[in-house]
Every structure is written in C-alpha cells, then in structure tokens.
Length: 475
Image 1 (tube, one colour):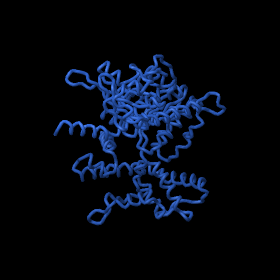
Image 2: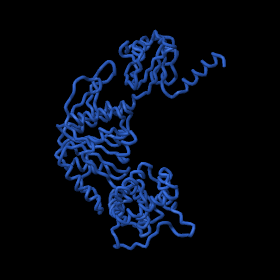
Image 3: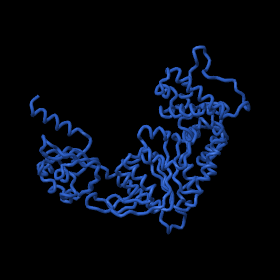
Image 4: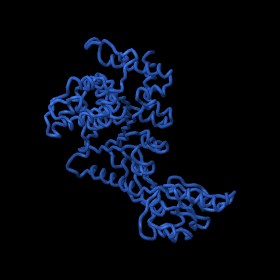
C-alpha cells in the first residue's frame, strides 16, 4: 500500500474515533485535530491546524497545557482534568490522557485523547451545592430531614432479618465503619439510613453517593473537593467528606471505586484527614463511613475489585442482607404494605391479592428482591379494575418467567415435595430447596459453576459464594 494511502487511512481511523484527538509536533504546532476535539473546543479544525497551540488557546501556558508539558518532560500524563477557555471565550472541561510521540529515541511531538466532562462536572457540582445547602447548620430543620427511613420501616417476620435489625441497632451506638452486602433490591440503604437515624449523628448530615455513577476523576473531586488552581482550572469546592463532617457518608457500590481511589479512602479511614484535589493542606473530618456492595465482599477481594487492606479496615461491622427468596415469610407482609402505599398514592381501595397470585408470589424467586416486588405491585395497581389483584393484572415479564418452569419428561414438576404447613420452619425448607436446586443445576451442567449460575439465573459470583457457605455449614 502506498505511503499516501496509509496516511489517509490512519487519518480516517483517528477521525472516526468518538473521542477528541489532538496531536502537536515538538514545537507545539497542531498537526492533527479530529472533529470530536473541534466540537468540544467549539472550533473548526482549520482554525487549529498548523497553528501554535497557545495562539489558539490563550488561557493556557507551557505549565498548564498537558500537551506542552509532555513535550518538555517526555513523560505521559494519564487522566488529567483540564479546564481552559478557547479563543472564542468558550470554557471547556475535559479529562485528558497525553502521551509522548517518539521516532526511535527522538521526541517528535505529543498526542492527547480527551473526553468532554463539562456537563457531567456541572451536574456533580450541583449535587455538591445541594448537599451543602442541606447541611447548613443554620437551617431550622435537622440536617438529616432528607433521610426517610428508620428501623421501624424495616418490615419483617424473618428471624434472620429481625436479628440483623438488632445487630444494626447496636452498631448505631458506635462510630465504626460498616460494610453491608446484599443483592440489588434487598434494602441496603434502608438499613444504612436506619443506622444513621438511630445514632448520635442522627441530627447531622447524611450523604449518599453511588460510586458507579461517576468516572473515577470526578468521583475523586466529588469526595475530596478541589482547590482553585491554574493547572486544573478547578474552583474551591468542598467535597462530600467535608459536607458530611459530623455525620454519615454512605458509599454504595464501593467495588466500583478504582483501586487507587480506594487507597485514598483507606487513608481517610485511618487518620480522619482529607486533602482537596490540587491542595496542600489537610483537613480533619469526623465522618462515619458506611459502604455497600452487591456481591460477596470476599469474592470482590479475590477478584481484585476491592483492596485487601480496605476490606479489613471497613469490615469492622458487617451485615449480609438475605434476598427475598430466603425470607419468603415476608412476601405477604410486604405486599400488604405496598398495596396500602399505592392505595394512598392513587386514591384506590384495593384490598389484596387473589389466592392464585398469592401462590405465584410465594413460589416466584424474586431476582430483583423487595424492589422488584414493589414494582410488580405498583404495575398491578395500574391495571386492576376491581378491589382484588388477579393474575391477569401482573406484569408480563413476571408471568413469562414463572411460565419458564418446565416439567420433567415424565410430566411432573421437578423438585416437588409433600411438605405441609407447620411441619418445619419455612426458612429451613427454603434453604433445603435452594440446596437441591443448586445441586440439580450442577448435576445438569456436570459441575460447571458458570453454566449452573446461568441455569439458576444468578451471577456466577453469587453461586460461588453460596457453594462456599454450604461447604462451611456441612463442617
């Protein structure tokens, strides 16, 4: 292939990438600038190509420009936030990875890959501002008025959950870190808010942040705050640790936090001090950290998604919330509760569910747990035209999933038993049935855990954890 064709193909590939690509030569002159970078900067490519970088972006200098810094140092810069104003006065905020370009040992330029985070950063800053307003001490109401759950809101007949509630009440008396594991929809935040409300911090800020909701660079600045500086272009802003001072910070989906940021969180847990991004001073904070994960924490550590040292530091007090399929005695209680809620909200007078629906709910595996049950009841309340919820009022996805249980070749349903009510405690029967289902799945897949998990409709990690627990129980 002729060299000219190769160059054209390379330019076409770089131009098609959905991220900003900016390449300068060793003198800081732009030699490639794709349409994504142009759109982010509010410029046209011909306004940048062939021109010195600082002429087009006058708000930068040789110290604040990541491209020029890499040309000078020859060292790459990864995931660097940058804020600048182009020559049309448009403010641009990006996350940049900038790499030196060498031919042999000679440095011939630098290439920068940029992601536009302006809108996302604006939203995160609005979140911080709202949290700051909520946490102002001059408010007439309590700082935790936004917290809506107490221990009395945890409705259960399950002995296991009742024991967890009692343990959580005791944990509320201290300031130790807490780690909660539970599948999605099991009510982790309900427990977290209840612990906060029952503690001596109940009239102090309660701030929750999902660690999977933001990219790592924004999550770090959101947690620790920023200091005004020409290099980052950031403003002086407190982070969530400062806003939660005296109260509780809830970090959901902690395993989504990058490992290097987990190390910074560990330091805060150890010494109670934070340092804003770009700052030199440390600030002491008094914050109780409660974290939650939706996979078994031991498995997250084994897979390298959670640091060992952070796990041991934050796992001072731990809770494992059972899925709804392991607390089936609560289904009818929760159904009545949700019907009452939606009766008030919709101005309806639904009295309950039919015996057929009750039987279906009692045998359904509820992969989405309590949250799924709530949504199913809400969906049925939208369809019902009588005072009783019937099978035809239920969402189609639930009916289809229930219909997926196929009979064995002899025409009988698998794993049927002749148990009668009162013969044995329901939790024991449920655990026994779960063991048999797992054993059946492993037998059908010849011991392949991944295939068995797919057959059961649960994550492989969850099945692996259950197998570990079963092994422990046998010994």
